[in-house]
Length: 153
Image (cartoon, rainbow, N blue to C red; front, side):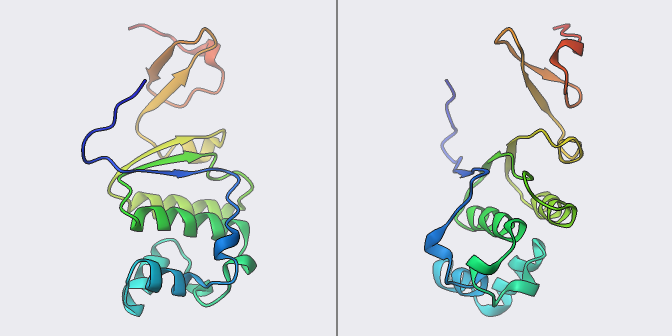
């Protein structure tokens, strides 16, 4: 069981990130209407996730990586201070994964990610391991083979 602090606002991103409610709307329109951003502010936010080039394309026509990055930006703009990411780089090409990582680096809150992406995992500074025995413990670096970890506590 976990308890969140009084000022923690979680935002969840799942690897199945279909959003039919956004399909016909452009990223620029979404940011300006749902988050009351002026055009310059909206374009600056989109550029942090390298989305300015597709600002006027309908969401449904964006690549999977662009859709994923926009949805994480929307969580951030909605006030999330804790991003819970389930395989955020799954099915992303290298350029999209790099843009996502760069966008997350500018996020001022906490990011908790479940990932099998070794490259993406290296950007984090703390690692929790869910061991085969059911124990959860912290490791100094990402662990890909749980049996290799020296669990001196």
